[in-house]
Image (tube, rainbow over all chains, first blue to last red):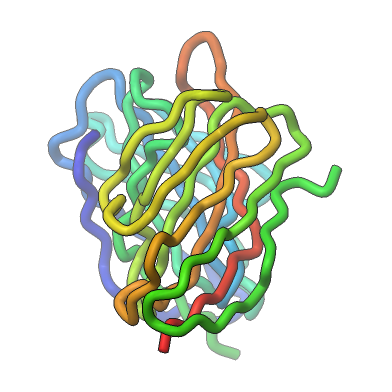
Length: 112
Length: 116
């Protein structure tokens, strides 16, 4: 599975959009991009995933560049409860979810 | 559904002691995994299983054993605890799909282990 690079930390004002970038320049055609988040001391929680089209659900939007070498997770109206570590994972369809490898993620701090 | 449950929530061990961390899921998921998370770090995969009777090693398997006798349970055994195994341990499960894509993992609340 391709490696990912994320900034170590980011801040965002409450009520504003939080845009979390992820670089995955070695991604291959059969690899999906997944985002999880981990609120302090809890187990990680799935947010969203995509292959090449942009995706949106009730939690967030995922924008994947046309060349698929990077993506951005967007939390449209960040709240204090969105303060967490956000993990970007790239995984092949040939790799089962149980083998997912997590990097260090981005620590997002939402400030009042 | 209770989802993924882990016991105990917190454990203190002395160096050399052994113990088993329990993990159970009631979602009939085929895949189960164990991760450890050291302070300020991301998750590292210890062992995983693709079904009852089938397990494999992850990134950091040394010092740990697993077995999967049922779909529901996936215990993690520490053979001889060392201070370097002080960490938070998370269990996760996921279902399989025909395409292999789109599977998401569901995580338990974690077990905090301190080895003195």
